[in-house]
Amino acid sequence: MCTEFGILAYKFQIMNLNKTMYAAICFALFFASSCRPGGAEYIDELDIVGTRYSKEADFSNKLTYSRPDSVVKISSSNVSDPDGNGKPDYISQASANLITAQIDQNMKKYGWTKVARDQNPDVYIMLSSMETTNIYYYYDSWYWGWGYGGGYPWYGGGWYYPGYYPPTYSTTKTGTLLMQMAAPKDSTLDGKMPIVWTGVINGMMEGSTSSFNSRVKKTIDQAFTQSPILKK
Image (tube, rainbow, N blue to C red; front, side, top):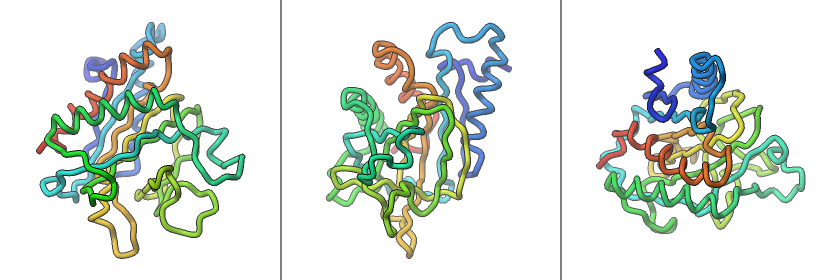
């Protein structure tokens, strides 16, 4: 059964919106490690690419997207906003540039057009990196719980980070990249913005700089390869 996870070391795909995404990641990690009793020889052998999309979403009428240039960094040391400034931390801009460039390349390949945030895009692509071993991860009407009275919290540069899933608890392996595609035009009457596609790359944020650079392309490409629903 290990061959089912053979591409990009291990991969899986969840096709509907449910509460088991991160549990599935943890299971895949356990299953993958059981296939290698001696442990992984290289860090990229631990990479896992998971994707899911909303069956209720109509992707045929979604053609444009926008995204921030930065990637939020979530860790056990900053999730409670210890400095009290109400602003998230970010991964290095060099790493963010590699990630966003690869996403742009795949979106263009699939027929999407990138537009500015103020041009009323069909979807927003929001990016975050979870750099911790254990984290309490919740989805509610909004994500960052840092003293805001409502709405979407501050993302940086005018961006806001949406989240619209049932509450979920999970533990994740250090170095996970989370890509969320939110559809602002499908917002509910109370202003909640649905997430129509999610990509999770577990393990990509680990390893040396050279290893990271080579794995960005491979793992992000895989997320889109297993998401044909995004093709125009």
